[in-house]
Length: 569
Image 1 (cartoon, rainbow, N blue to C red):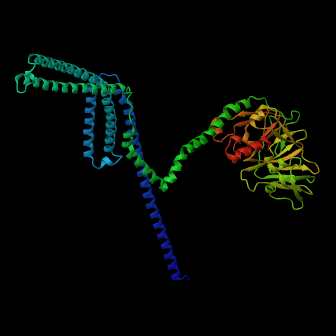
Image 2 (tube, rainbow, N blue to C red):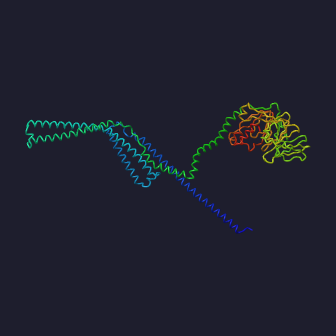
Image 3 (cartoon, rainbow, N blue to C red):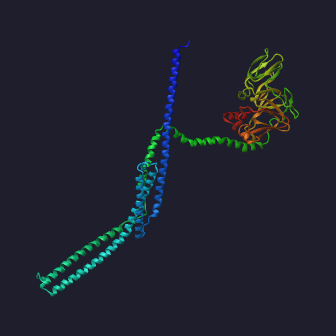
């Protein structure tokens, strides 16, 4: 009887573990949600910051390009420069007023780089700093243009005033000389009228000389100023400094840098960033992987196949007979009967015969018959026997006439037929469809190999090797859902994936599959086998489901099928 304490303990532990699992899931979900929300917020902010930075840099670049065209060039008259200076001063003043208004109206948003207020203020700052540079350039240009003219004017005025003073001084001296002649003694006696007149003229002369000296000194100073103006270098075109504009954009760059650092520390960013980096390449690879089968098959269907179809047919053994007998009837002419295959094929084995059969297809054997193992079907072709699966065969030698049943215990779609290749006849057959052979004891089955490298059609269809079974021979073959033996007198075309063999005296060629899409989706092979002549062809009712239609099929199986096709297996 189960202990109540143990049941309660087990239930409690299970409940606690479930609770811990739920708590872990909830905490994990909360953590991931918070991380994703943080990551999404930073990503949105980064996108906005990049947009603001790009817009400010665009404004900076546009102004740095357009403003020089608005500034007069060197050589412009001073009055035009003065008018342009007043216009720039007015424009700068208006923008400063607008900037101050936005600054006062948005006390919080003005510090947020992603806000509209920050963007507008930053644009105004960039415009103001560039306009101020243009104004400073214009003032300097105006000074260089108007300064020499003003200095020359003042020099002329001062020189004219100095000449007037010199004339007055001369007249004063003439008056003093005349007085000294009129009153040669009295002008020297103090308190006399002549003495007082002479003193007035002397004081007036001294004052005039002082004024003249001041004017002469100012002329010298103005001449030095004029010389300094003349030595100044000729001003070049306006070159704007981007430093002030870059300092305006600096808060956006700093915020971007801070967000980048936060994103670098995010676990989601560490995962998503590599994914984003390889995603374009992965998409291209995916598109290439999706389109490459279409391209390869299109080239095979529309380029290779038409060339192969136009090549002349191959006739391996034109002197051999094409007649083949079966357990039901003989097929060798147009009137021959199409044979039927069976899921279970009963055989009658004579006492002088022996059966070489794959063990998996042997349903039963006579009790008194001798049996042993034959390792290869043909020792002259060991590789072909191994690849075709015709190895480790069971050899049965009955003492008398015995009945044996051939059937598959593994492949439910396999059906079998017994083909009797008579004396003088030859049959091209794929060894992979061979299940067994009935032959006379002491007489080996004759198998030959025929290579065709010197034909373009062989290279286009990748069929270089043909394996021919010579009569007399009785061959047990299998096919998916049945084996059909049909005459090829008036010409016969069969799906290449279903072909098992054909008479060696027939004209063998290939025909392109009827439609491209049936070939592309793997429903039909690229080529149909075509025969014509006095013989027969052997084929399965349907291609095997594992067939991949050769080299242009799917995956490694298609490549392996192509290799077996090259070897004729």
